Length: 436
Ligand code: SF4
Image 1 (cartoon, protein in one colour):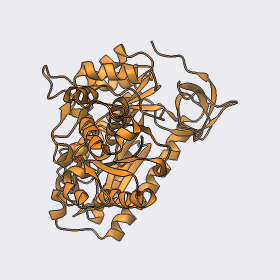
Image 2 (image 1 turned 180 degrees about the vertical axis):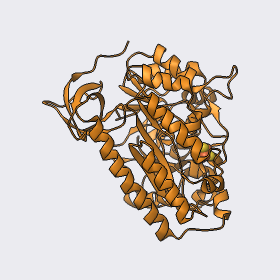
Image 3 (image 1 turned 45 degrees about the vertical axis):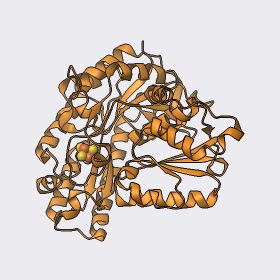
Image 4 (image 1 turned 30 degrees about the horizontal axis):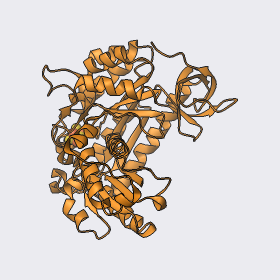
């Protein structure tokens, strides 16, 4: 039995796909196919961050059914939660799992594949206990990747007006720290870098008894899991405490000096419309404090251009904040309405052409700042993790660099090297010593 996996969206979704893959493989339900054409089952893990993301999943499903009409198609993920009826109504779709539960994916795949499984001789008993043990198992590796995703929580308690993710994923739920450590120990056997991810990791531990924090979890991971470099996934600027900054600056690179802190807008009226809880000044002050305490640090942010009600003065305020703060890269998206979110009700829709123009201006500025940051790091010794087979690697502070080496570097370990003067290339000098 061969299974093709297609993932849309964020790292949390990619992690969830790996859990689904692991559950199917552990139950003898099949191995990853070399391509869509060879698959008996196609698992589509959807994203709902914009209407386009939903539309992209539907397009993929139709294309997949044309390219391989024999394969069964199972749809899961965030979009499947909010648009289950639409997917069930598609003639190409054989099963819908509303969410990311590997046990549900396993059960549904058994249902749709049941007629073919006995002939293939791969059917196993699917007792309830078996399903639960598969679902509870820690993720062992992220197939085909050097960087592993370590998901520590799911869901979000905030209510940003543009966000459908929280509707699909529900309230914030933290994983038990013992389970996180066990998973990290397992993933560390296959990945030289682990990215601590989730939907809202800054709220990690608030729902646990006893209550805990992300900082306590990271400290424990650094102590208990020898070997890999850790990196924080996206985290809100206002939720980064001083303890976390101490770990970023004092762990000798084991916690990568890189923060991705969503900004969304640099104008207070827009932030209020977005129902963000922080002001421009709160973000600005924290970003400057962080940059002063952790040197060097790769700083990134998400920005939405053309949110309803955004005036030219609001946009100019965002541009000036971006100019002032030491960002090394930005992810800029023109606003795109997502139904079922509060933002669609807001007045002051910005024409698409203007949103795109504002996004372009911000991206150009981000590119300029990125080149400036890379030049500043040029000539420095760095530790890099290889990325796939594409001949690129990532530094701790999140510079993506071309790799120059006498022979292909071992992707299973971190490498030491020196950056070129413009910071765009690394010359590998050897393997980095592993942390104890
Ligand atoms: S913080 Fe806002 S944007 Fe982020 S997941 Fe929560 S509601 Fe969505």
